[in-house]
Image (cartoon, rainbow, N blue to C red; front, side, top):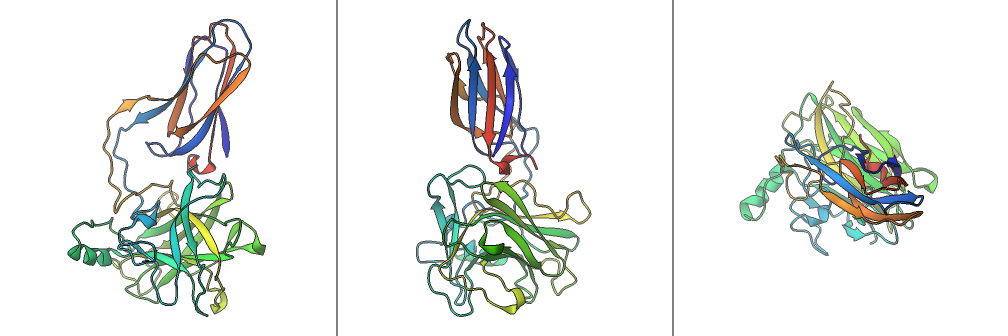
Length: 363
C-alpha cells in the first residue's frame, strides 16, 4: 500500500497536490484521510477532487475479452466450463474457475473485493492439470455464426516483429494454495509451438518466482503489494518456430508445471487471479517486452472512449472539521487527484493523505 501526502498547509484557502497514474478514468479504490491540528478561526472545509481530462482517445492495449472477470464470458455457468470466449473444458485438464468475493479483508490488486479463483477441487487424472484459456478469434467467429448475440473480439494473431506479452496478477490463497503455475502464449495452429513460462512458490511460500521458460520467451514477477504479484510472459516475434504470421493466439493459465517432463499434483488446490492482459509491441520499442498498466475489458472488446470532458468533480467532501481530529473515507482513485482547502480562517494545519494499492502506481 502506498501512502502519499498530497497536501500539508496552514493556508486560509488553497488547491494543490496530485498523484498521477496511467490512464484517464477511475482506476481503483483507496482511502483519504484529513488531519486538522490547532484551534482558532472557523472549522475548515476540504474537498477531494479527481481530474477528468480526455485530450486523446484511450488506445486499445489489452486484446483479451472479459479480462477482469472471464466468468462473465457468455456460455459459462455452474457445471458448464465451455464458454464462447473463455473455457476450461478438457478431458485431462478438468478445472473450476469462477468469480469469487474474497474472504475477510482481502482485496484484489486494485482495492476491489472480487477476483478469479482457479481450482482443482475435484480429483484430477494421474496426468492432468487444472486450466482455463481464451478462445481464438476463429473459434469465436464460428460461434457468432450461430449466435447473433455474440460480438467479435480484438484481433489476436502472431506478428513477426512484435513482442506478444501476456500478464496477470496472482495471489496464493491462505489455504489450499497451488505450488506452481504456468502461462502460455500458444499457437493452436501448430500445436508443438507452446511458448510458456513456469512459476513456482518456492518452499511453500507466497512469493512466485520464475522457474523456467521456453526458447524466445521471457518472464518476470513484480510485487504490487498485499501478496499480489504481476506475472508476465513475453514471446519475441515468431521464435524461429513453425508459427507463422497471422496464426491465432490462445492464452492458457495452468495450475502446476511441466518441469522435467513431470506432472505436479494439483488436486485440491487453488489460486487467485486478476487482471488478465494480452498486448503486442514492436520489437525494439521502449520497454517492448514489459507489460503496461492494466486496462480493463469488460466485454468482448475494448471500445475506446473519445471524451472531451475536462472537469474536476468532487469525490469526497469534509466540512466543518473539528480541531485536532482526523477524518477518513474510502474513495475512487483517479489518474490525477487534488484537494481544495477552504474557510481555514484560523490557519490550522491541514494534512491530506491518500492511501492506494501499489498496483495503481504509475508504471
